[in-house]
Length: 174
Ligand code: HEC
Image 1 (cartoon, rainbow, N blue to C red):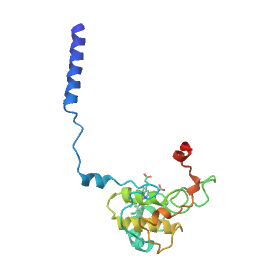
Image 2: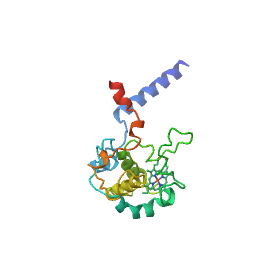
Image 3: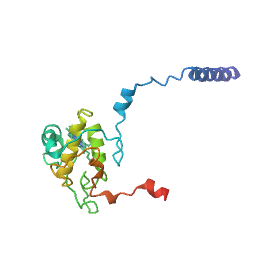
Image 4: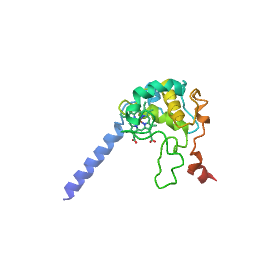
C-alpha cells in the first residue's frame, strides 16, 4: 500500500516537472492571425475599421445575402425579425429587434461582420458590412437611405432604446 502511494506521488511529481519543462500551450500566432480575430467593436466605436456604406448600397446585398432568412422587409423568417417592435418592450408581447431593443448601433456592425450570413460568417467586406448595417438601420427608420455610415458617423447614432439599458460598470464606479 505504502509502495503504491509513493509510486503515485512519484508519477505526479514527474508529470509536474515534465509540464514545467514543456507547458505545451500551443503555438505563437503571427500578427496577421491576431489582427484577423481582433474583431470586437466597443459601444463607442473603438476598433471600427475604415470603409463606408449607405442603405442604398446595401439593398442588393441584403436581398442576395440576408432576405432568405430575415424576410425582404426584415420581418423575420427562419431567422429573427430585424425590424419592428417599437414600443412593445413593456407590453405583454415584447418584440425585441435591432430597432426596438439594441442600445448601440456599433454592435450591429460587429455582429453582422462576425456572424452573418449565418451560413457564411466572416465572408463580408467592411464596406459591405457598413452598407448592411445602414440598410438594417434604415429599415428601422433610424437613418436615411443615403446616410453615410463609417467609423466616425456610426458611433454617433442614437438608438431608440438606448436609455432602456443601464451601464452597470458606470453605476458601480459612482
Ligand atoms: C441562413 C440564414 C441566415 C442568413 C442568410 C442570415 N441570417 Fe442573420 N440570423 C440568422 C439566425 C438563425 C439568427 C439568430 C442567431 C442567434 O440568435 O444565435 C440571425 C441573427 C441576426 C441578427 C441579430 C438579430 C437579433 O436581434 O438578435 C442580425 C442583426 C442579423 N442576423 C443580420 C443578418 C444580415 C445583415 C444578413 C445578411 C448579410 C443575415 N443576417 C443573413 C439567420 C440568417
